Image (cartoon, rainbow, N blue to C red; front, side, top):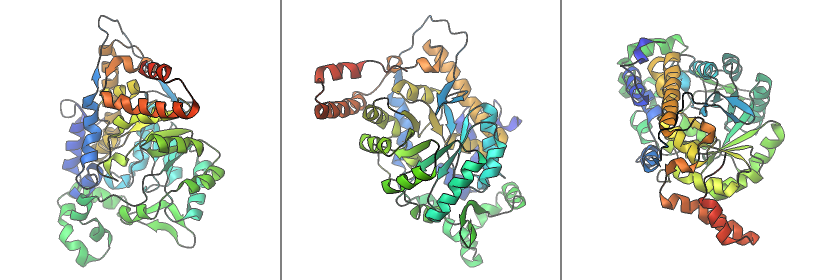
Length: 422
């Protein structure tokens, strides 16, 4: 592994963030780092973990810790999945393949974005672990159906359907950095923003050696071929997924479906009814609707709404292994992390992604030992204290459901206060 991402230079994910900022042009770094509007939700996703505190069990011998879990029946070496991050090839040559290879080597899953610069077949071949394909409806239904068939043939084991992009969020950093102008291919419009690329000559040389501005090879438009690389904001506006769309997607894809972007109990129930096999509590990393609650805060409500009928994952704000522990204590099966590994990819390619995973794994083991817990599967709410209003969200959902079904309110409240069993 590259010495540039080893201690003492890189000790945590924030160190990888700083390294990525040094290597990447501002427009690329801000694409990874930024969020929508005032970025309140982006910051809240991280700060929410500060509101949950630990209740350790001391004088407990934990010579080793078992981090393994299963998602969709697939064993993972730790409860971590690399989230879909579009345009990873801008961050490092063959970026999606690089990240998938690192995930496979670590024994965890990798989710490939529709808006990627590498062919899905090449990404699947690069990883020795499970790979998921994240589906946007860019290019229309026929284009999506073709991508679904390619994903099946390439060996992707799950389809991730993102439901929180009816329009793209207002990502102000991208506007200030001239994303549309740089993608216009018109020199006059590009000139005011070119300096941010020229000041990063090593990145620029590797970018050009990798083919420069790529196309979207997994968005093959009938009669036109692969979609030209365009402003992601525009692409997202053209890819809205409705509950109706989930019907034909379910018919076209016989494997597991992961619905990502669930943020309320009502949508969680609807997603289960629509045939979801796994839910991801996500607000798109604070890149869509600014001002929504952080995902960790919404996790109890979503869990209460589905009554253990389905595995629930958490996405958003994960920067430390202790964050993963808190999410698992609240009831998540595993977490997705996007920015954490994207910083590593932007900083040092394969070495950076491997280092990000290593940091989270080491943090996770250390936290479990300090808690006096020998296995991530044993984590529950007895290991944490959480804000009362978070728990009240889940209690309110359960009371509402009980009133509809004629359940016993006192018995329901009592069961809700008990630690969730895994």
